Every structure is written in C-alpha cells, then in structure tokens.
Image: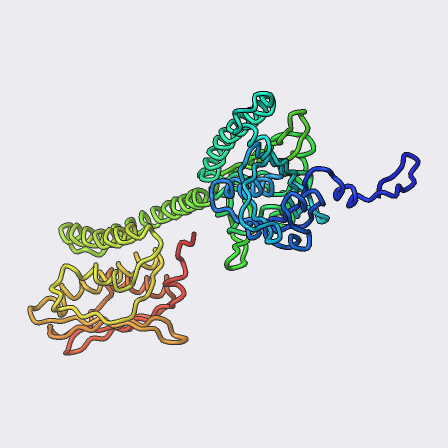
Length: 495
C-alpha cells in the first residue's frame, strides 16, 4: 500500500499500478518462466495470464533463430549481473491463437529488461517492458509514404543504437571471456553482504565448483567466514582501503570429501565504485600458492635433514678412520679397510640421494652392498621393509662388514661358497635377519674382537636396541640379528 505524507494509507496497491500500466510489462524468474504479467502484455501477445503464469516463455513463444538467442542472452545477463539491459530492435514472431486465425504473426519490438530482487534479497527476477514497433517498421517498408519520414528516421536511430549496443556487448563478452579463463582467480562481490555476482573458472576450481552466484560469502563459504575473512571484506567495503595478503593460510572445504584442506593464497580486495564514487562492492583477485609454499617448506626440511645427515656422516667417517687405524696390523691394510668402509658409506648415500633422503628399502641396501659378487652366489629372501635414512646407512655398514668377513675368512673366500640372507618381522620381537654361509672353509671363533665385530655389535645394540648372535661351525659362519622395527623405520622425513 502507498502512504500519504501524513503517514495514512492510500487505497492504492502496487499490484493495481503494475496491472494498469499502459505499456506491456511482465516478470520472469531465472528459468524464464512467467511470474507476473499486466493487461497490456496480455493484449499484445494475445494470451491470458492463466495461459502464461508458470509457463516457460520459450515454450509458448519458441524461436530457435538469432532473435530467440539474443532474447535469452539478455535475460541471463540481467539475472547474472543485476544490471538492466536493452534490446533496441528485435524481430520476434508470435503465434496467433486459433480464434484469431492461427499461424505466426510477424512483430518487431523494443525491450527493456530490469533486474528485480525477491523477498529473500538473493533471488533475482527480470521485468520486461516492451514496445511494439511493428507499425513503424511497416511504415519504413512503405517507401510511398513520404509524410511519415519522422517515424522512419526514428526506426533507423533505433537500429543504429541496437548495432552500437551489440558491438559494446561483443567487447564486453570478450573481456568477460578473458577474465573467465584467466589463470588467476577473480570474483565480484556486491553490496554490504558481499553477494557473489561473478566468479571465474580459477575461483570455482579453488572452492570446489560449489554454487556461488547470488549467495553472500557467509552462506556460500561458511568455513572462510570463521577465519576472519568477513571482517576484512567489511573493512574494505566500509573504507575503500585495499587489502593485500601473501601466502595467507586458509582452510577451504573440499566439496567432494567434505574435509577442510590447507591452502595458501596471495590475494587482494579492492573496492568497486559507481560513477558517483559510492562503494557498491568488492573485487577479489589472487593466485593459489599452495604448491609453492609446500615446496618451499619441503626444501627447508630437506636442507635441515641434509645438514643433520652431513654431521652424522662426518662423525661416522671419523670413527671409521680412527678405529680402523688402531686395529689394522699395517698401513696398507688400514688404507684398504678405510677405503672399503667409506665406499659402503658412499653407496648408501647415493641410494638415499636418489630418494631425496626420505627412505630406502632394506632389500635395495643389501643388494647394493653385495652387488660386486657373483649373483649366483648370493640368495636374498624377505619382504619389502622401509628404512629411515639413519637406518639405511647403519644397515649398509653392517652388511658391508659381514660381506667383508665372508670374503676374507668365509664362504666368499672360496670358489664354491654361498651366502643366504633372509629376513622377516616377528610380533613383539622386531625385524629378524639371518646371515648364513655355506660351501666355504669351516668357521673358527677368533680369540678377540676385531673392529668389524665391534662395529656390528655397536650398530645392532646401540642404534637399534637389538641382539647379535654369531655362530661358528664346520659348515661356515652364520648369525642371527634382531632389530627393533620402530627404530628402523621411525625416522623418516615427513613433509
């Protein structure tokens, strides 16, 4: 109801005003279905409102040609952008009812399309005001009527305006396409509630292809609303001051798994102003830096791990050199033993470098250390078992000492000798590894412990909390080694 200046109601209803407008008006929803029509519209299309309300315009008035597509595109632009659109000149035939002879009637129109908001504030409709210019077109076609030149000129101006409008829309569509396909993400938020009116493909990929257009940020992306984003948007909308962020961490919900995922974004918020300078919305632009940030984090961890490993390696080298020199009978033997042990250490490092110092497999470590021998003389049997970097180096040194002993005194010192290595996990025990030699000379227990034996025992008990049980017999040397599984695989670098 209308109000007088003194606050009293007038007996006039907006519905009556709409219905009594002299020019044709109608309202469509976003699916192009009729919501309302006035009497003038009923008259011009020769249909009653009972035939129109709830029906799709393009079902009642089909047109698969250029005019139909232009009309549909105009409706969709108004719904999507919230801005009015004008078709200055459009030929569009309408079907005549059977009582009026049936068939199609050729008509020409000028149409103005205006956005209308629903009660919720987020629903949007299109109101069309049409002017039937068919008579003017027919006058133009009748060149024998010179006294109606004014109408002909009017039509020409309308057609020129339409051509200019189409050219502008073509340029606008090209800019829109470029924004839509840009690698960086863009979005346009309108009003104090920050309602999405545009989001390009990159933005949709970032947020998981959820429904955004026509919804405020708080409703469309509630998870970021709880992370301080709403305060930032409100500040930009209120003051017009730009906000910029670099590698800001945000948890965005994955729409497929419904889980929050860590992302890192560079982005900025800029105020959008109308021709009078008033702030009407916020322009969002940015890029997803998640992979870059994770890569940098990974590099920092790897560098720290590398520094740690270098220090440990230098300590291992120092220990190997000093203890080998003390136990070697002469300088030549010392040089040979030091070189062999450092080579074993180098092989383990090469294997770890290929895996970026994350982990290795136990079988790969053993295969590398025995690769210099005839493969027919070595048997390996056991499941895959992942080793941490520290365990990889220690196990390489352990296998090196066992194989060196086999070459000097055991099965690999003869042409017919053979070595079998087996391993498996046992509950509440850990990893159990058996080294068994056969086909070589009998094994004799030494009077004392050399550096190799002390090194093995140090690795097994000191680093892995395990046991080393050697056995000396006529068939050859063998040993059973147990290692705590958690200490073998628990030191992986995790990114």
